[in-house]
Image (cartoon, rainbow, N blue to C red; front, side, top):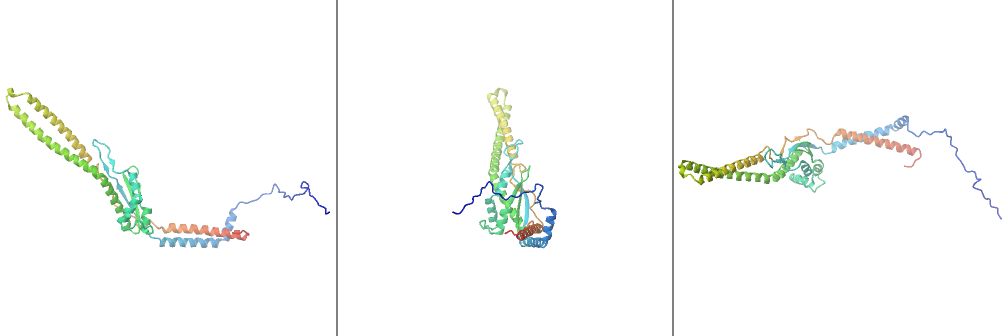
Length: 305
């Protein structure tokens, strides 16, 4: 029978690696390593940096130039009550900002410029949706509007149309209130006219009674004086109401939204900016060159990439 040799695992010598406790490993990358890497791949890094730079400049020249128009719009207000009460804005500033940046407002603006809002491939549609903005001016009732176009006239026309749309919306909201105030003022004027006629009649009647002999005076005199007192008090109340309504209709206190100053358009295109495009291309090219150099080193060391 063939003999079988059994090995006792307890007595089998296992290969061991004795590590010197004083042995150290330097896995950190030193400044010299970085310099050596750059020198080794200098041509590659510079080449791709220049390619990126040229591509950035070329892309900036190929892109559509955009001019930006800016303007401030003062939100209209209504003086709901007289006596020094604070006016109320026709529409809160935050709501106006949200309205301008809503898609429905953008659609209406594009239609006013003979553009199809559904055509998202149109460069102008894209620019309007991306650049039409409204920002509240802190502590005021002003809204700062801005939009871009592909030439100064186009950007100005877009902003003018935006202002007109907002003014029309706010005017419609304020018109019913202002019309009601005017109707109330007209009724008060009519009542004052009727009151003046009544007071004149009572004055004439009292004057006639004063000429009569004392014996002819009667309780009617007291009635006339009572009517005159009431008519005078009514007139005072009507004058107060008229003053309050005139204050509500004061154009300095109640008015629709209006532009504050003229529309300004940038002297030069705000997009694209060749310097930024060139800088971005240069940085991207540098990273590409560094990455390719790193991959080349890995391949030379036998790494599969």
